Structure formats: C-alpha cells, structure tokens
Image 1 (cartoon, rainbow, N blue to C red):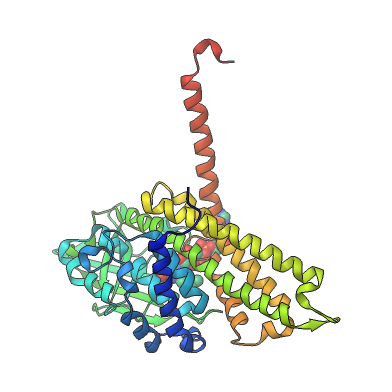
Image 2: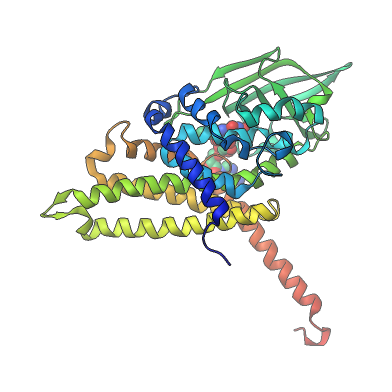
Length: 392
Ligand SMILES: Cc1cc2nc3c(=O)[nH]c(=O)nc-3n(C[C@H](O)[C@H](O)[C@H](O)COP(=O)(O)OP(=O)(O)OC[C@H]3O[C@@H](n4cnc5c(N)ncnc54)[C@H](O)[C@@H]3O)c2cc1C
C-alpha cells in the first residue's frame, strides 16, 4: 500500500504549482472579485490544467476524469487563490453530467470548449427554497405542444453570469431531469447573488418560459439526480483537496509568524499554548490529507461505491481547515485580522467550504446511514452463514 502520491500525480502537482505561481500576483485582486478576473483566467487557459476536467474524447487528458488528479490540483491552487481554484474546479463540476450522459451532438458542441477554457461551465441545483433538500426543487419543465418550456429559479450558482451554459436540475413529469441551458437562452435572466464573506463568482438564474430542445436533456427523463450524484462522487473529494491546500497555507503563515515574532523574550512558537496550536494543526492536517488522498484514490476506481469516503474526506478536511485558519489567526494576533492579508482571506475562504457540495451536517447524516447499513448487512451475512444450531 502506498501512502505517497506516485510520479504521475507529483508531476501534476508540479504543473499546478507553476500555474499557481503565475497567478500569485493577481491573487489578492482576484479573490476580492465576484466576476471573472481575466488575467487569472488567461493563466489557466494558457496551461493544460483544464484538460483534467473533461474526458479524452473531447480534448481531455485521461479517458475519464481522474478524481485524484483534480484533488491534487485543487490542493495547490486553493493554497494560492480561491478564485483560481474555483475557475478550475467548476469546469469539471459544471460539465461532468453532460460528459456522462449528454447526447453526442451536445457533448461535441460544448465539451471541447470546456477543455480549452473557451467556455466556462455552471451547475444549477440550489433554489431559493431548496438547498440541502434538493428533491424539493420547484423549477420545472412542461410540454407545450412540440416545445419543452422551463420555468423557475436557481440561486447561488457558481460561474453565474460568466458561464456559457448551465446544467440545470428541473422537475419533469414525476421525476427530476437535467437540462443544458445555454447562457444566451431567451427568457433566462441572470442577476448577481448578494456578496458573501469570501467573494465568489455567483449569480441567481431566473427561467421565464425558456424553451429547451428535447436534445438538451442530459440523459433520460427523471434520471437527472443520478448525474448530479455521479458528479458529487467524482468532485466532492476535490473540495477536501482544496481544504487541505487552504489549511496548509494558513498553517505556513502561522508558523512563519510564530517562529519570528518575539514576546516575553521568546518566539511565540516556544510559548506552550502557541506550540500546542501549531502541533495540533499540523497533526490534524496530515490526517486530513491522508484521508483525502485515500478517498480520491478510491474514487478513481469506483466513484459511486466510495462516495461515503469522499464525504468523510470532505467533512474532515473542511472542518480541519476551519479549525486551522481560526488558530492561525489567533496565533497571529492583531496581524491576522488585517483586511486582505493572506490569513484574513484564508479565514474567510475556509467558511463556505463547510456549507457547499454537502454541508457537514448532511455529510454526517449520509456517512452514519452507510455505517449502520453496512454493519447491519454484515450482521445479516454472518447470520446467513452461521449454521442454524450455532445461533442463539
Ligand atoms: C460559494 C458557494 C458556491 C455555491 N455554488 C453552487 C453552485 O454552483 N450550484 C448550486 O446549485 N449551488 C451552489 N451553492 C449552494 C450550496 O449548494 C448550498 O448552499 C448548500 O447545498 C446548502 O444549502 P442551503 O445553503 O440552502 O442550506 P440549508 O439546506 O437551508 O441548510 C441550512 C443548515 O441546516 C442544516 N441542515 C439542512 N438539512 C439538514 C438535515 N436534514 N439534518 C441536519 N441538518 C440539516 C445544514 O447543514 C445547514 O447547516 C453554492 C454555495 C456557496 C456558499
């Protein structure tokens, strides 16, 4: 069993590090923006990283999207800039359902543009009144003669206003279907989402009698949630990757500060309570990283079967990032509070990670359900193989 990344992923990590270094001069400016920073986008499109977000058939690097590769890239990019990380990750998150189940016509039209970075992708699930409880969405498609017509809203959509298309979950007949809606569709209105504590490219989408082609349905009627779950199975663990990258950056800042700032005649790092925070943070970070790589490796083999491990990694890594950034600010005292300092940015950016792509509470629910089911199934299997007379 290997506990280290092999050469293939180390090379991808180096590639991402070069992109992060080129983007670093824009980081403060871009991370304060909720629209696309064109300089940062250029850095990404000039690199080959986007080709990790789509399958080889449409210009991607690997036959299928590799969750460990995406995870490793996000770890590096997020350590430098949340804007950079999001511009990268959303290409995969927004297009995965399309790559998995879209018609050839639709995939050939859009996916090469996603791979090249010419077009940004978006995924529209959340609504004003439906967040964690996705089955409660009200956006719906109905048939009007020969036409399919889409009505409703989507809220807090990443890449909103910047994407070339959105994969939108909508009620259809008795189920939920996924549709590709081009950003310039007539009847689609895009308005800014209120600014959040860590600026992010976000918008509200309103569909007012938007006509969609039958061909724009991704997969079968009523099977939309399957493609959404498949997307999560590949990309949820990458949020864990981004979380450990962010936590590492915060810990490095805190260690630098604690190693050089002297109070009471000694560097802060030699004062017991500060050393305690640094030591605990490093240990927790390494534990989160190991779990993240393990979960991403499992997702490489079978994303759906290992979704509970991806959930565990996302839960542990995002909660760890929250604790570490908080301690890093504490260790840095007043300097950790300075607006747009690296630590202050990381502190704000860690917070949304515990909410999107499965909030911590929802993840714990799912993990617990899997645990109980597994244990009960093991018990039942054991009972089935135990001879009748040996049972109590
Ligand atoms: C930066 C950012 C980017 C985003 N990008 C996108 C995007 O691209 N596309 C998209 O569709 N959405 C996006 N979202 C929305 C995101 O998916 C939702 O915020 C998330 O699903 C949680 O939904 P909610 O905010 O409505 O919270 P709610 O579902 O209202 O939950 C509120 C609180 O209640 C808890 N809770 C809810 N249900 C339960 C339960 N059954 N048991 C215990 N606790 C529960 C939650 O854990 C949470 O703490 C984004 C959000 C953010 C912050």
